[in-house]
Image (cartoon, rainbow, N blue to C red; front, side):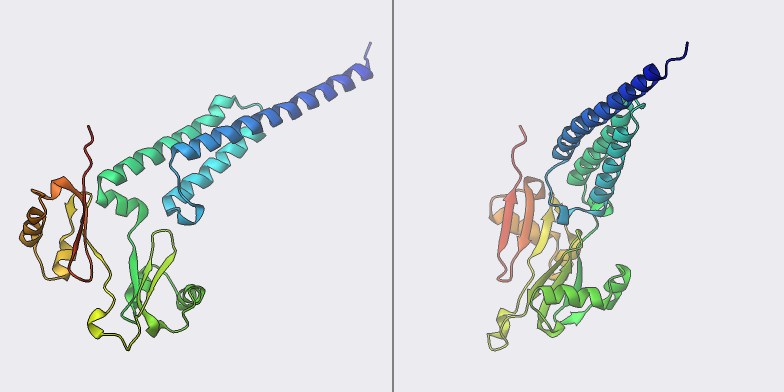
Amino acid sequence: MYHTDDVCLDVERGGFVEFLTIILRSLFIYFFVLLVMRLMGKREIGKLSVFDLVVSIMIADFAVLSIEDTKLPLFLGLLPIITMMTVQIFLSWLSMKSSSIRHIVDGKPTILIKDGKIQEEEMKHHRYNLDDLMTQLREKNISNVAEVDFAILETSGKLSVFPKKNSQEDPSQKFFLPLPLVIDGRIQLDRLEQIGKDREWLQNQLERYGYPDTDSVFFVSLDRYGRLYIDPKQDEN
């Protein structure tokens, strides 16, 4: 004999079980994704690189699929998230070891305004229009491009602006953007050429401060007064 009441009861129970499963999956995946984001490193949302943003979006999509498809085994739902986390951590590690890979993954900061002049080729290269530029300048309370010494488009898309100093000040005190001469122990030859120096000059400067070579320093920059800032490498042992 066919009992409709039993069928309805089974349907209700099945619906309740699925409802409960979704809730439990949501809670578990929420804390799992939090753990994954912490393992990938702390970074503000507004400072994410394009690569970090893509990874974050993909992780969010995979998390939603894992919650919605209750028939999918939980481990299989988490596997793509674990894969993306592993890729992100691995590329971040490679980026710390190689500036070339870091430039490929994160890009390089770009000067859009130099000494009050817009660098048109750089803007075209990054598909950055004048409306975008003027909007970000206004957000910095700057209405005239001529008031800007340097404007740098960071890898996060944020515009860093360095206004010109008062024109009545000593012209010799013109703003000078600190130049990184050594990054991750690697000499930046293009920066040395920019200031008319060579590798030998840098080596002599480091020896003056007690550093035998660039392998013993992590970062070196030159300020407007010709002073070197030297950050030695930490002992990894």
